[in-house]
Length: 104
Image 1 (cartoon, helix red, strand yellow):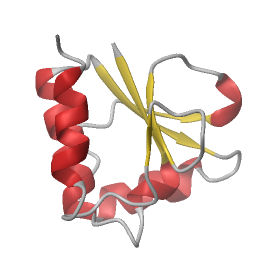
Image 2 (cartoon, rainbow, N blue to C red):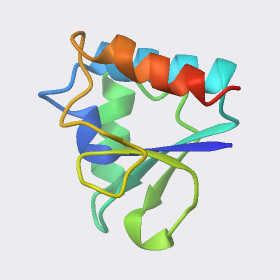
Image 3 (cartoon, rainbow, N blue to C red):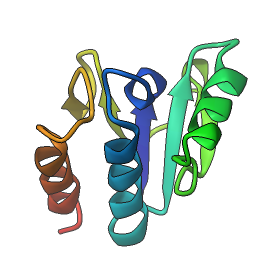
C-alpha cells in the first residue's frame, strides 16, 4: 500500500515533528511507501525543506500531482481519503488512528 501526502501539509501551519511522526508510523506499521505529492516546479523546494528540518527519513519519493499515483491520500481538498488543513498535535492522533484502521 502507498500513502500520498500533499506537499503543503509539510510546512506551517503543520508541525514538522508531527509530519515526521505520521510518516514514521505509516511507513513502519502500514504502508510500503510514503510519497509527497508536489505541484510542478516545487519538488526541490519541498525536498530541501523536509531535509533541512529532519523530516525526510520516512518519505520514499517526491512525486508530481500530474503523475496520478494511486494510493491512500491525505490532502487539503476533497477527493482525498483523509482531508485536513494541517498536521499538528491537535489532530495527529486522529490521523494515526485513521492510518491504523487501514491495517486491518
